[in-house]
Image (cartoon, rainbow, N blue to C red; front, side, top):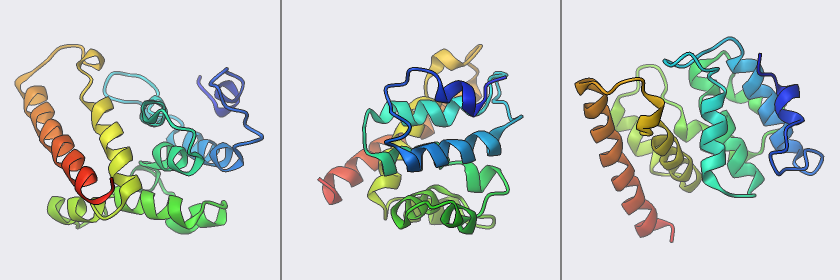
Length: 166
C-alpha cells in the first residue's frame, strides 16, 4: 500500500525538512484519501500528486493547494481542520476556490474558481491530468464529451489567467 512514509522516502526532489507545510499537507491528503481508488483502480492519492507534479514549481504553498485540492470535497476534512494543521490563508483560499460546495451550481463554482490565481493554476493542472487519455483503458463517447468539456474549461481558464494575472 502506498503510504506517506513511502512517498516521504522517495527521491521526489524535495527536502521535507525545508517544506514543512508541504509535509503537513501531504500527510493530510494521504490520510484523507487512504483507501480511495480512482476509476482505474489506482490509489486516488496518485491524482493529487500528479496535479502537484505537473505544476513544475517550488512554490510550497501552491504545491500544498494542489495536493489538498480534493480533500474538503471528497473527505471529512474542513477548512478549519486545514487552519488547525497550520495551512496558510493563501492555501485555504486556494483550496476553497477549488472546492465545489453541496448545492453550488457549476456556474457558481466556476465563477468562484476564476477569482483566485492559485486556484486557476491548480485547476489547469488538474484538467491536464484528468484529460490524459493514457489513463483510460478505452475511450468511450462519454469520455470524448468529458474531454471536450475539460478542453473548453482549460482554454477559458488560460484566457482568464492571461488577462487578469500576467
